[in-house]
Image 1 (cartoon, rainbow, N blue to C red):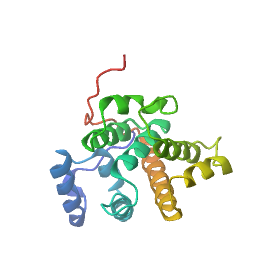
Image 2: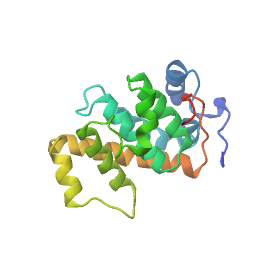
Image 3: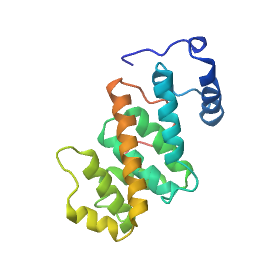
Image 4: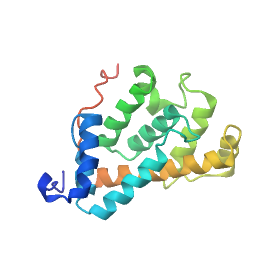
Length: 183
């Protein structure tokens, strides 16, 4: 990593419950969280925002949220995010084959039309040289209402924030997702 985390006792006491929860959920404190936590108020803001995006009552299915976060992470070359988000995607019941097919989702029969529309939108939002045009948006509107599109856009924007932060600081994968090598 380009910047090292602080020692655990050097973080404010009020961040310890977040670290405890990560140890409980992932078995370790996430390296990325330790970097965000170097600025405690920034960490709290990001943690609260993530909690609102990845809530149980989101209009976006957990699988679709994970598909989008993995794709955005892949586009932004964030090995940490690809690792963690792929592991979450697998826990949400997606096959290894589907996770492996995600880089080529356009050509794959494993993805439903609504998933392809959301992935195309995520791709267009994430790639600065592409952008969202009316055709992409009209395809998205076939499957999602306006409120769900707002949620999807917020998720994509958050994942871009997170993966660009982690990629810029060279946060490594932590070994959460052990997919077999592509054949």
